[in-house]
Image 1 (cartoon, one colour):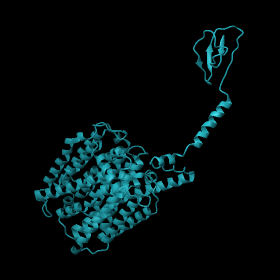
Image 2 (cartoon, rainbow, N blue to C red; image 1 turned 45 degrees about the vertical axis):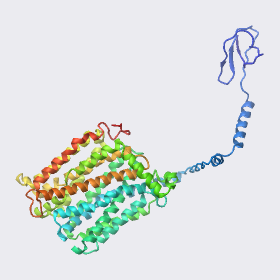
Image 3 (tube, one colour; image 1 turned 90 degrees about the horizontal axis):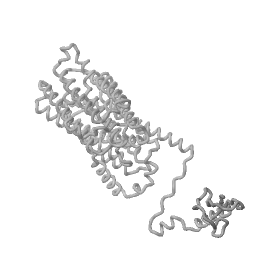
Image 4 (tube, rainbow, N blue to C red; image 1 turned 60 degrees about the vertical axis):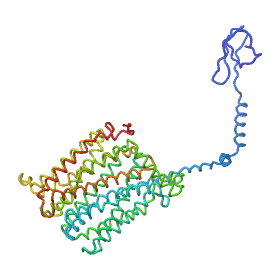
Length: 529
């Protein structure tokens, strides 16, 4: 007979041999026993009153217990902050609109950064024709003007650690735009004489200082948002905005300079554009993934010195990671070891070949179109190629593009029936475009490796390292020009300098093993070396 009953010592199933009791789903026991047919089946389960009594006892004990904050305060530990209230649908929609406005500010910042070639084209003509600087002096001024860009890690740490009115990105964009507005506005006012050269040099330094602040913060914003997007997409959009600004700046710069022959007009136009950027950043509320949580954290409430010290310490820890250190070293040395002869080439094209500024501007347009094309190609296809193989191919293309300048210097293009204007228009900015695109895969790699909260610091170190490498390459270019005897009226040995430059561009392939062999932009994790 089957008997179902609770296990009681004197129950009807207590006597006689039986199998071990088994627990049923409702908490009773099921006992198998062979007995007389007069026995009946009984089922017992916990009563509803017992369940209610247990629930009431649990509620009474919870109500009688002291609050968690009191226990934490008694033990010396401060209570945790109260949770943030849930946002309504209207608040979420408003936050989404503000986030889009942040993207407009960031996108405009990248576009203005690319459009800086518009006033710089006029500034180069102003320095060579208005002040009569030699090719070596022009290149020294260009590289000396980039010195504020080396201080980018400081600006990155400040934007990560120091909040201004509950925000730590957009206020710095406003400060950078204001500094650039002051610099270029002053250049548009002061007279073009040799006596004002110190003032003009100070304006160049202040303008690049403001540009470095804006660039650092824009890179940090892209890195923060890229955590919630597909790998490489936001970096590609930033490069597209940068290339679009450069395209329009070079296209319009050569035309305006050819028509007006007045650099101050271009300085004034760029100042109005900076004023627009400043007004947009001031009227936009910051809505970032880090803005709401980080402001209430202990990291922000600490003293400024402790906060900055912690940021620098964490930055050094992040940089010393092999996964970050070796790619950074490769990209920086790949720029530093190649002597840049941009100032010499500019003087060769304008003074020796007598080319119009519109031709040089249009050649930059072709270069930016190539950057746009390569960026779109990378976003769709090239990011699936392992990083080491991709960068090796790009570096080889860069060396060949540098070698293409030899055709112009030796006038081989004229032997082939190609005018100088056509050749400069098609190939002059090829090497510069490839060098600009080479940075994109490394930006995607660092975005995937950057620790949360240190986006500004790490990318500021990255970009400042690139600027410092460019300054070194420019200094090497000036030394190379002086060594081989290139001057404003003698370009006979310029071809030797281009050959040495091409060989130097192949040197970084010797330590290409610094880069991860199998990592692609679709990988979220980079395996250790």
